[in-house]
Length: 357
Image (tube, rainbow, N blue to C red; front, side, top):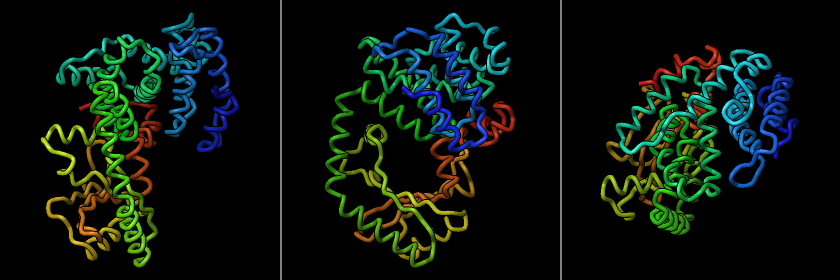
């Protein structure tokens, strides 16, 4: 279990002027309040809020949000009260912890897509401070990572709830990394047979295409070096749920899928994005109808990137994403990567506008 100083050190790596006193105080208070409580796994209950806090440090959240993560179950599951938290940590912290308690009490069992959409809107409506949703999503992610320890009767319900509500919510907030992980874990429990089959087939295809992928990566890196464009080139493989969903929706077989693999090109500037695109299109043929410029026209959740598909060096289709480092960060962490919510005290204007629709 992570110790106090380790948590502080994690935050210090990206926020040198961290409020150590706040983190230490929240750590000790939550640990004492949860006392000898245990998780279904048998681990100390405090390990859960601590893991939620750790997830938020990966997203470079501020110490107030991380302190709320440490405290998020205290009102619901211990003798702590809103008044006590207000007194010890201030009314703003108390309001955030109480907001999480209210979310926990919601009946989130969803059977229909329409009902799930209404519940997503409800979550957004009562979470006027976006930090509440960020902590809630981190809380759900850790609970999904430890779902094996839950009674079998509850696993399917929790997985369906995650697929219907929390994964789409993470996507709407632009947090693609979290959305994908939530979907993959949920898929594993909702349809284990399909999950195993798709995962095994993807592994087999990857093994068969390793040489080709390396050839394309080398060709792209050489092209950018020739044009003096500093770029990171990495292959990426579609996730099992994404592949399964596409096969089901379009009635496709594995053999008919043309975009299982792709490449992500990360550069330093917007100008370099277009220079890289120009170098690619003058070297290889572009596949018609497969170009999208989300830099000039960002998605509602502020996702920005250039998407294109070419006929690559080995005559196969190659799907490419071209973006800057900052765009890559926002694609991974969404609104959590923005300073906008911090500048407004966590209020859901600006970055929260798109996800409230």
